Length: 38
Image 1: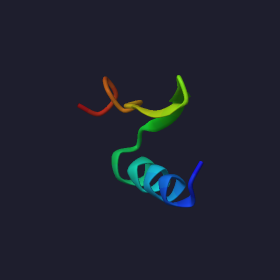
Image 2: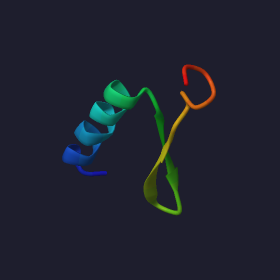
Image 3: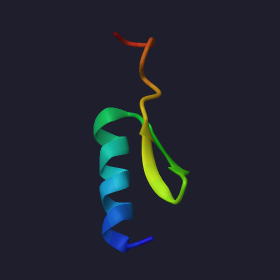
Image 4: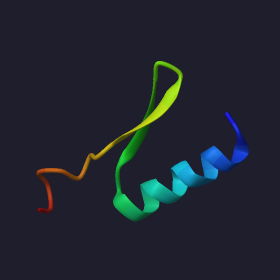
């Protein structure tokens, strides 16, 4: 993984409160806040 990808990943987690998973070698964003604080 490139460092900038890790920085972007952490930034997205902070902003959206979601979670990143590696699927098929790519970062896929999973929204874990859905259904909690709509």
